[in-house]
Each structure stands twice: as structure tokens, then as C-alpha cells.
Image 1 (cartoon, one colour):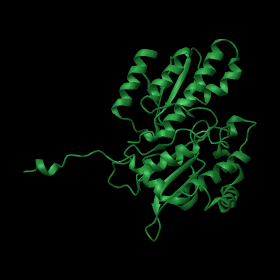
Image 2 (tube, rainbow, N blue to C red; image 1 turned 90 degrees about the vertical axis):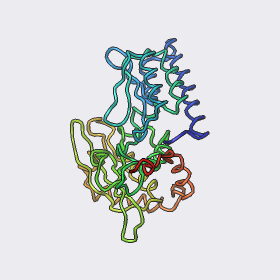
Image 3 (cartoon, rainbow, N blue to C red; image 1 turned 180 degrees about the horizontal axis):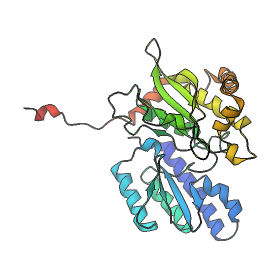
Image 4 (cartoon, rainbow, N blue to C red; image 1 turned 45 degrees about the vertical axis):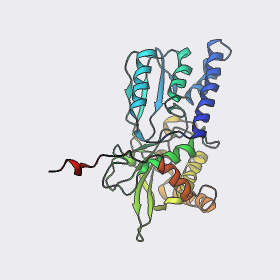
Length: 306
């Protein structure tokens, strides 16, 4: 189970404080709803027909009991006693009052949760297989990689205002339990002939009004170069994705209209420049993040055997 480090805690506190000030200015009428819109969207707050809706991230779909109790408390105290778990491992509260949202975010921060980048044209919550970390057939536990992607993508200075929302899913086992081919980028763990772990990268999937199945853009990206390859894809999308029509702004449309080979050529050119640079994943950082997901001490069943 991942736990915040010092940077995470300070980062979420700072964002909560900033948004509290923005909410106060909105309530006082110092900024209009149109001016408030991009600010609230970056903090997971939507304006629906009758009320605001707050979407809270559950990165890679993992919750501990303390967090579940906090969500229940928020539902009872600030909403109507219930929430809605989404297909992409978030939870939504549909009736919070605007003045209570900063308080809710503070409560979430106390149990290492947040709503950052759960809406808006940015990289959304990273999702994984529901059995991640516990399945016997895993090639790799995808949760530490998902956490690294979360850290890389949070408030990324180049990718905060993409042409449209952008979704990434990872699957660590041979059988796809994360629906990776229905995401903007899908990552499938694999091994090469030497037994080294890497990732198949699928691009251009999605549902909605124009459902499409992702296409394989690279059959093996080495583990340590995954971030550089992801950045290469998103840079190409950010450069060429349409901004004139939101219904044609997703990367699936770009891949469909330009062709996979054209997009792949652009991505590989970016990757050639970035490979081996500052986005290379050092093993010590992988080990540090992985240790945060160490399982608890389990009882041995041998003691109960006949």
C-alpha cells in the first residue's frame, strides 16, 4: 500500500491551500464562474446541472480501511450519505457545497488522498489490474510503476493543458485485466528473449461516442526507459492533437487520421532525443517506491494444517 513521502504531503497541502483561496475568491464574487472553471477542474470539481461534483482519485485502485472510513465520513458529513465509484478507479460525490470543498480536500489529505487532475485536459488517474500486487501470474507488480507515472504526470508543466483528457492504464500479468486497449495509452508488462522486463505500448484506444481499440506502437520498451517513451507520445499528441473540436481532440482520432506509422515515426524521433536522459528510471528509485508497496506480514497456513 503506497504511503505519502514528505514531498507528497507538502505538495497536497500546498494545492489544498491554493484552491481554498480560489474558492473564497469565487464565493466573494471576485472571480467569475468562467474564470473559476479551469481552477476547479484541475482540482477535480465539476459544475453539474444542480450542484458541484467532486471526483477523488484512487490511484491504481487501491484503498486501505482508514481511507474507506474517511470517504464514508465525507459522504455522511458533506454529501448525501453515498458516493459513486467509477470505472476508472475514482470516487465521485455529487452534492458537496462549494464552501465545503476545501475542507473536504483537507480531510482527504489527512489520509493521503487527493482530487488533483481527476478532471480537465490533463493526464488523469493512472489505473491498473484490480488484482495488482496479489495475482500469482504477475510478470511485475504494476502499482509502483503506476505511482512513478502519477508523480511524473502531476502538474507536468508541458502537459497541464492537453488538447483533451488523457488516460493511462497498466497491466502486470499476461492476461489483460485492466482494459489497456481502451485507453489513450495502455501498458502491458512483458519480457524479451533475455528475460528482461519491459512494456508493450498500445496507443489510441478509447470508448465514448467514437470507440476505438488501441494499436500496438512498440512491442518492447525497456523498463528503465518507459517514462521517456510516455513523454515522447504525449509530446507528439500535445503538438498535433486538435484543439478546434473537442469531439476530435483525443489521441485515438489523431492515430486514426494520421495513421499509426506516421505517429510512430514522430514518437520514435522524440524518443531518440530523450532516451538515456533525465527520465531514465534509476533502480534505486524503483526499489524505494516498490518498498512502499511491501505486503503486510501474513500468517502462515502451515500452522493450521492437519
